[in-house]
Image (cartoon, rainbow, N blue to C red; front, side, top):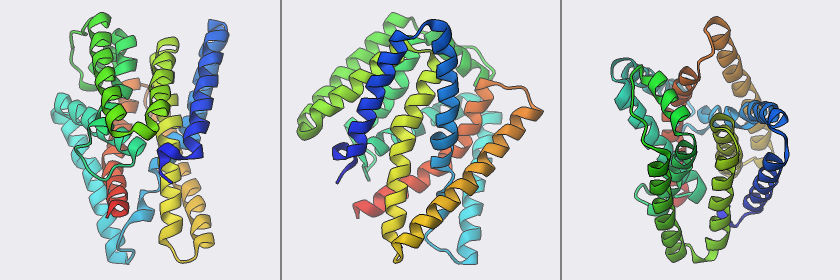
Length: 290
């Protein structure tokens, strides 16, 4: 069964609806604290872990194959770090492009690149929170590239987001008739969510709840089916998930212990992890599509 028709998708719809109700019901003081605590919790158990297991999916599990995988993985991160250092604007554009593709691919489980509803979904997941919190978002972008931008007005950004949302709904109405209503609910709930909550916790919670959880479920099923001993494979998956997640969390904790917390720096760190992770996940979706 595809993700769009799975029980997980309906559970996520229900949880997102409940979160929207809580967000509009709680007083602002309680809401702000609750959102940040929930954001950190989801980031710890879903956001970081879903990208920490990439080593499990290497095709060649020999010593040479493992070394080659790690060399390519870490080399990609190093090359991207250099791009951030020497050409921050280009690195930021690449981060947006990779994120758009990755979010859309996970939501629609597409093995191809040029899928219009997939790319539009990934684009809108980024555009709507930016449209509602333009000044804050562009301040973060400026801190990431150490430069200044002229933020478009909220009206312009929301008009663009509304236009592309209409295009998205037309396309899914034509290409995904079976799932149109649930995709409409998904889009509607996320727009309401981004409207009623602050930028950072709002986006991180959506990233963890909608993207990371679905991606982790796909990884889990892929790894279990790809191994002859399914029970042992599942145990190995969770052990590795815990180990690599702890390493990732310790790294981030250590980084922010020795350096001041900086939202832009956090997103740059996440981008370094995201780029090779996207290549790995793209390979998994393509293997299933073959």
